[in-house]
Image (tube, rainbow, N blue to C red; front, top):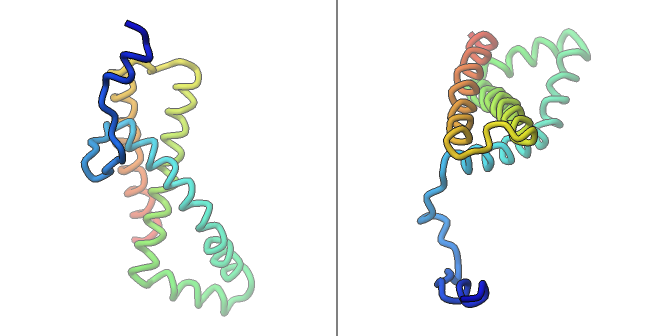
Amino acid sequence: MSTTTAKAARPRPKHLDLSKIRLPLPGWVSIMHRVSGAGLFLAIPFLLWLLDMSLSTEIGFESLAAILQLWWVKALLTGLVWAYMHHFCAGIRYLLLDMHKCVDLPAARTSAAVVYFVSIPLAALIAWRLFI
């Protein structure tokens, strides 16, 4: 049996219904790594504006302090802290994968779980220290 016959015998989906696909944990880490990187990149102008406001004048610093008391700004910055921590931890995981460490399936699943078990508490700790 040739490889082309074996490929033709398997029914292939005509379209992918993403709501029915059960993605494994390493797949979620990969997607969230990309999403967090894009979110951090898109947040650069906002963060630079906050930095500029805090360093420009005393009045700017006081108005920034007032802005940072808003709950939705705290939530946004907490999300950015988590995105940074997740992107950092997943980046270390991908560096290990590039060095051919943790490439077998059980180790890859464990390292994907470690990314979440490290990034979420670190983000919570940093956000708690920043906003409380």
